[in-house]
Image 1 (tube, helix red, strand yellow):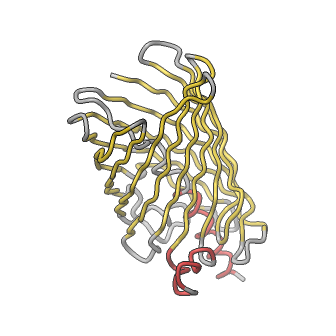
Image 2: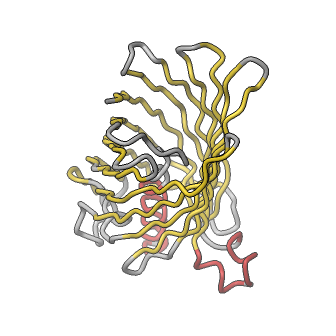
Image 3: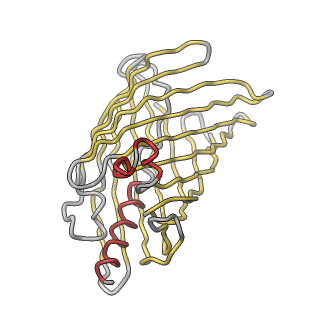
Amino acid sequence: MRLLGLLAVATLVASVLLANRGAHAGAWTLPAGRGQAIVTGTFQKADRYFDAQGRTIRGPDYRKFEATAFIEYGLTDTLTAILSPSLLSTRVAGPAPADYTGLGYTEIGARYRIVDRDGWIVSAQAIAAFPGPTNPLNPAEVCCTDKYADARLLIGKSFMLGRWPSFVDAQAAYRLRAGAASDEVRLDLTFGIRPLPQWLFLAQSFNVLATNGLAGGGLLGLLSGTRYHKVQVGAVWDFADNWSLQVAGVATLQGKNAPLERGLVSGLWYRF
């Protein structure tokens, strides 16, 4: 039972800490010499998680706060550089409580625009990530001690929904992770609509499928291994020419060996 408890803690923490990474940028690149910085604070908590059959069961109480700076800059009109450092504070309750406060992941990479035609954008992006935590035996650090590389294809389309400017952005990625953690397939979808000039509303879906399920039966094995499906809904208010505020709610809807989490996201955007 103690071993099962430790495994539950590890599964819970690993899934929660990785659930919100890589969700900031779309397929569009920035013009040469232009940039933007997005600083977000995310608070998440969970005390229930999905077991291997997708059933909801009780788990150790978990809380996390992450502050992330996502910075991108247009090196050329088709090539955008990306830098994203983060700070992390996590706490896991239980008979042997654990906590961590310090650096989180730092991501470095670039996005290259391949196609720009009739409102369609197709881009390729590559990211390398370097961890801050160093102790894989600490349940509060278990997810974040290994490097990873993320390669993804991004497709975006801008259009008018009635009189409202709108867009969709779809991303498919393969995340190669060092160490014992399983590689991941990531599928993200964003819909944005601007009913008022200063307001952008966003609905997003983030889906992570660990490749350890592939051994269970071809591509369909992705659905039998560790996975989770999250939604995030919020708004961005352009309160000044170069400044915006973001607020959103995020939740896990379904999964296997993953936490049932709830959280709030707030952000400050600056364009330069």
